Image (cartoon, rainbow, N blue to C red; front, side, top):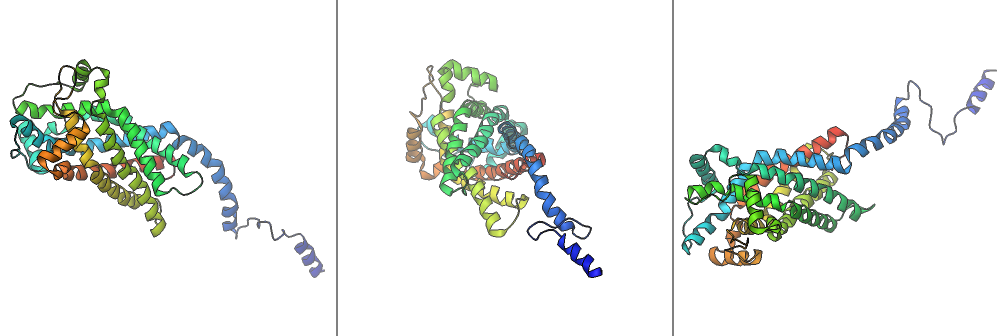
Length: 352
């Protein structure tokens, strides 16, 4: 009788190709069968919200604003360093020794002669710029890499193409704010040199630029600006994305803060190396005085500025301000990417 019962029970067992039912002793089986279903039901809602176009845009703007505020004094110091040789050359016709010779001395001079708050002079248009620049570059890069990658792993050349395209488009749209920022940044130095101020605020700078050169005058220096942005984002976006995937693949580390830190430091170094020469040219073209029609008085264009800079001051003049550029880009990139990734994670999105 007992064997008959056992035989009857065994005949009613679940076929071997079906998952075993969950029991008190098979919690693992319950997790394996229930978990995929739960994730499948939950993930579309989170993905749609956190990975949407506008959510990604707003997160990138917010993260960039944090990074810009923290590192802005280094940006101001870099700008002063890049034009100090130019100002002396233009005034006297010969190259003379600049007043400030390094980042620390330049920053110290600004604090001593103009006040510590002047280290944040021009931050308002800088933040306006990131509303356009950072938002556009991130969502454009994300869109381009998805289209280029398809169902395959993203190749280096695809990431580079996406980075150049995203940086170029974003910077062209943000060029007016960048031009206003450079004009405001230089006012403190002009006043110390006994020159009449050109602008009194970001709004005044905007009006003066339009008055002198029309609406198209807002894009003065946009060519070297776009060239710089293409190189910087080739270094920043492409390096961050590539190094992050490489580190995770080779080390087995999860998508964590350590990976973000390593990737952002590498991105800042490569971006500074590639972008500093174009940044020097861009700053000089945008800062040069103009005639009543808005035409530059020192340079005909970015190529002429490049030739004059190398011819009069040597090749390494193109790397004036490299140290503050790198020192700024490293913490800027670190702050931006950590903030960006953390906010996305808290909203339910996966790693960028």
